[in-house]
Image 1 (cartoon, chains in turn brown, red):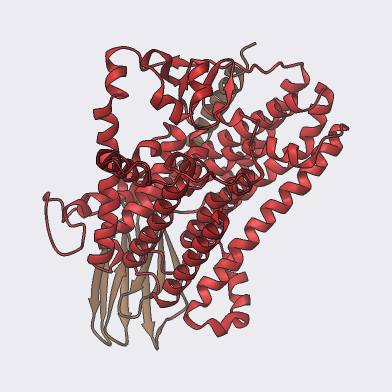
Image 2: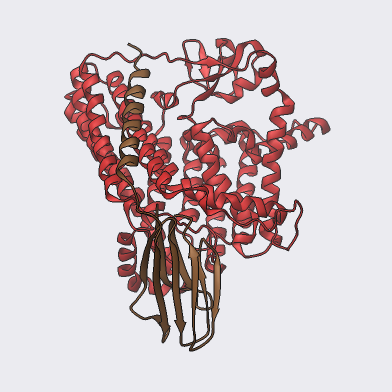
Length: 119
Length: 518
């Protein structure tokens, strides 16, 4: 019996079966619009550092407001938005890339929220 | 006299390393960022389930009087015209020159380039191309480090110059390498690298990297000068030891089929059935018709169970621990542990982070070594045979490598595809001085190249496959180590527990929410 081949065949078959199973089991809904908001006051995001979850393909709208002028940076997507002290702004982006992306205030090097885009 | 040189060199290296550590700023922002999402539960459970189920399949096969072969299928691929080009001097030296070029680039970019890590090519070369990319290639393709090693190539040029000028009688010294040293220098140097990679908070600063490369070059060239290039490479050069270990898993090997060549070449390569495999010194001096490049099944190279020394075993266990520690530091368990230790290490000021990380790394290595030693005791007890623990430990250690490898590959898969793209703009602007040599300086990283679900699937598949190879290798080793099949089978129950446990740790780390530590 050529033992080098048998474990490989078993593994490959099981790996393929497992993969098919996962692919079939995971199905996501159609693209939707999602709204999130970050309010930055007194050096902290109000309500703490939140995790925003969305699915790939969604259109995401984030409202930003801050008591001091700040530059919000969405990592990964590499988007930057300067918001003046005491004012509001909003970002819209298409969630085409999956993953976990920090939203940070550049000047303070502080993470204020995380955007999680699931497949 | 030689021992004192070694200790002096080691002491000097450590001292300089600490001096640099004390003087560097915290890691620059932006490089090495991970956008991974942790595994969802079904993947974790599915992976775990497969791992356990397939382990028992292999146990079952062993029980049914399986006779492992010493021979394995191998296809020769370097005969003929294509083969002679591939192993020819032009080809090998082209690759060597690439290695030298990258080495020089790291030094220049590190010392003269921008301190911003994401805009300096030295950082990407070391942490993406070298640590991850080369690890992948070594494990999945073959031991390309043998050609890319810049210290080997540069010293060869030095030797050629010396021969030309006929100073051969004086330089290099070629003192005999003390047997007691064995692989300990490689182990120590690799440990230093592991510390830089996992614990040192200034590890993305270009100048620090260039300095470490310079120090390592000094140590390596000195060692080669004193003991001889090949002797040093084989037992004391950390990266040759590391990549050769990974390359044992790979599907390619070089072999010399003439026994007399193997016996007369300078290194003491192992000779099985008149063939010496993966002995590069022999390969270089062998006549063309007695040497060849072969394709073989994965993990075959991890089967060699003779002559793994204690220091080699220590190195293997350190590689395992380092790879796991790297991922573990991103989990909230570690962050909690870190926060609880902070008050005790306050006196180190800005270096508290490095110190606590170092404690963690040492502890992780300690845990791996102790767990392994304890486990080997159980393996021997379960078998019912009387064998020395040291010998059994050395025989089985290589079988754990596929698990570490699978975890390393899974952990860095998306990192390689995303941060790896930084090579494109950096080739046009390696020093971060706003150049644009090839017109690619404005390239923006394409995130959609890797889908998170694909990463999950590949990670789970890699871990399951790595585990299966590990169990398979351990069973084969057991059948060759113990005298009866029954003893071998019983000895594998504790080993199975260890391997399943180790694989679960890898799966668990991948399933943890990634906590960003600043």
